[in-house]
Length: 604
Image 1 (cartoon, helix red, strand yellow):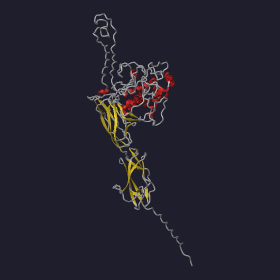
Image 2 (cartoon, rainbow, N blue to C red; image 1 turned 90 degrees about the vertical axis):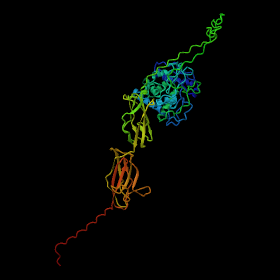
Image 3 (tube, one colour; image 1 turned 180 degrees about the vertical axis):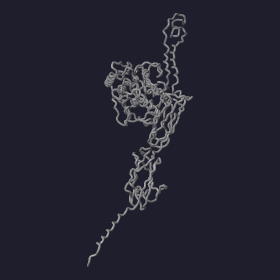
Image 4 (cartoon, rainbow, N blue to C red; image 1 turned 30 degrees about the vertical axis):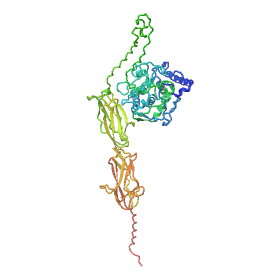
C-alpha cells in the first residue's frame, strides 16, 4: 500500500527517508534476521519500505482510503503524523449490518481460537474502512459476499510493488500480475495461507466479508502478538501495510469506533473520498466493475510479429519471404499467419455443495412461549433447526436471527441481529432476548445466511411490569380527627414472585366499602395541585425498591371507618383501614369522698 497520503507526497525526500527509516527499524525488531520482500512499493521519494515479516505483506502495500474520522468524534483520537487533506464530512459512526456482524463474529471466534491475542473488533472495522470503505458502504449480499469485486491496481512495479501472478487469475481475474482483492484487500499469495472460512460454508472466499474478517484477525494475531500491548498492536498493523501513515490512520479509526458506533442497513454506507494514490502520479486502483468470479482472465493476445526479409530466389514466392507474406517467408501469397493464441486456462472444477447449499428450510426446534415483562430477560430462548428437503438436519450452517416490531426488545448485548451456527443436530440457539420498556408484540425472523431458503418466524410479547403482592411498610394505625389530617403517609412495598417489583403502575382509591369499589364521596381525601379534594389517584408507580408512598391524607367532618384500596398491574391489591373520630376528652377527676365525722358528737 502507499507509504504516504496523496498531498503529503510533496513534502520531499528528507521527511520520507526519516519515516521509512523509523518503520524499517520497527520492522526489523519484529523478526530478527528476516529478509524483507523484494517487491515492496517505492515511496514518492524513491525510498524502499521493507516488509516487516517473512510471511509476506497482507496487501502488497496497495493504495488505501486516507479519510480521517469526523471532527465530531466523541473524544479526541490519536493524531496522525501524516494525515490526509482533512476529515470526511459524512457520518461515519454507522457500519453496515452484515459487515459489522462479520467483525464481531471474527472477534468472538478469535477469543476462543487465539485467546492471548485480545483482538478488538474495532481494529478490524478500522482496517475494513481504510481498505475498502466497509466493503464499499456494505455492498454485500445476505451471505456477506461483495456484490462486485473490489480490486486494487495490478502490482506490476509501475509505482507499486512488483508481484507476478500467483493464482492464475483465479481471484483477481489477472493472470499477469497480482492485485489486492476483497473487502480486506488481501493479495492472492497471502490469501493462499491466511484465508479462512468465516461463515461456515466450506469455502475460503476473499470476497466474503466473514471469511476476510476472520482471515485478517488471524493474520494480525500471528507471531504470538498480544494486541492489548501497544508495541504488538503497532507491529501487527504495520505488517498489514508497512507505512507509518497507515498505522496512524488505522489507530484513528479504531479509537473512533471504540467511542461508539451503530448498525445501518447494508448498502447504505458512504464510501470514502480520498485515497493514498490521489495526486501522487501513481495509477488509480479501479472501481469494482466486475462481478465476483473465480475464472482466471486470459492473457492478452500478442500482435503478429513482422517476418524477416526472405532471400529472392526468383521462383515467385518460394523463397524465404522475399515474395511471400513478408512475415514468415513461407510463400503463402503475402497473407500473414498470426501467432497461435495462448491456451485457455482450465476452468476450476465445480466444488461440491456446501452445507449451506443443502438447506431447504428451517423449522422451530421446540421454542416455548416467548413472553416477558418490560425490563426483564426472556426465560425462553429461540431455537431453530436447518433441514434438507427430506427433513435431514444440517450442521455448521449460519442462521441469522433478526428482531423487528414496535418494541425496543433486543438480544443480550443490545443488538437486534445475531448470527449463530447450527450444531451437530442442525440446531442454532439464539442469544437470550431482553425486553425493553415498550410493551407489545414483536417478531424474530430466522433465515439462512447466504441462501434464500424458507425461514421461520417467532412472535414474542412484552407485557407491563407487574406485582402480585402489596404490603404496608408500617403497622401504625391510621387515625385522624374530623376536619384534620392524618399524621403519617401510607407507604406500601410491591413484590412479584418474592422479588422487588419496581416501576409498576398503581392506583389508589378511597372506596365505599369492601364490597363496593366505587369511589366514596365523603370521608378522607387527597388534595390535587389546586388543593381540591381528590379520592382517586392514578399514574402512580413504584420506585426502584418497589416502594410506593402516597400523598398526605385529610379528613372532612364525617366520622367513621373508611377504606383505601391500592391496586397494581398484575392484580396485587391492598385495602387499608382509616379511622376518623373525635379526639377523646380527658376524663373528669372524681370528687374527693366526704370525710366521715367521728362517731359521737361534742357535748355542749
